[in-house]
Image (cartoon, rainbow, N blue to C red; front, side):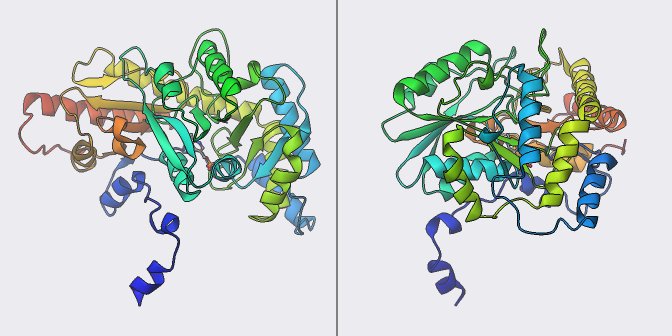
Length: 405
Ligand SMILES: Cc1ncc(COP(=O)(O)O)c(C=O)c1O
């Protein structure tokens, strides 16, 4: 019975992979006193001024069906937000409110690729991207990036070489989850020139753009700074990270305004739009949230500095200082497979990290630590990791039995 139910489902649904980040969370289930840095989110709840806007909207009876593209006040607020970031006007008609960054990715993929098509993406990468491509019956073609201690490196010849006549899009996530890699302007220009020449799309995931640690500018280099309005670029974005709204599930797509009717229809036939009260909250986030975003960025900066201070020069570790996003992607110099280490860290150091294999084959030797957390939690994690590393150094062969930090 069970098997006949399954055999009548689409292969793409059955074969969708489980997120392997969850593996370690399951492994740690029931274990006490873990410092959990495996998830891609901070520890602060959504601030009151955002929640209050949602509550006011509900109290005012804004509980009806809504406009699929998003209410005009929110689309205008998103346009103003981009204007503030990039110093030029944006047409509100290019923004479409959707139910999360993930849904934005899923819709972008489905707009450009289907059975037999390919989307090329540099890895290590957030696993949901390739899974979304698979569910659309297309193929994700991974281009492994090279680890270098001075920063992860994307070989553009390899990226362009991976594109064939089946390629419909290149997916660029900069700043990257999990590596912290940030494309520089020359790389963005080269990718855009290639995509223009071949007539393929770019799906640009710049959701971590505010979390940028380079000199001389506040945000990471962006396709917005070099593109024409009607370039084939679909931006996917989210309220999750900047405004501590991971649980709300609201994001946006930015696309050439000419695609308006198409995107409106696709929203109509999926969620039919994001609840108005959530959109009111999103407006509050954009219009009144700068101080909060600054606080989030500062917290990530502090977390990053603590890690670099603690581990720079430590020969036991392999890592590149993240240039953006809020992840520290590291491995042990003598360990090509980090999955057993991830489990050991839970059991022995009491620190929960995401295993690198979840981000593709090229991530196997690494683990991802989210440093968008409190100073106290970072201190605890650093202390525990240091103790574990010292004990391992002293007696690498034995099972560690550390006193709890
Ligand atoms: C690179 C990247 N893109 C998109 C998302 C999606 O965010 P959300 O679905 O919470 O809006 C995430 C979440 O971790 C991410 O890391």
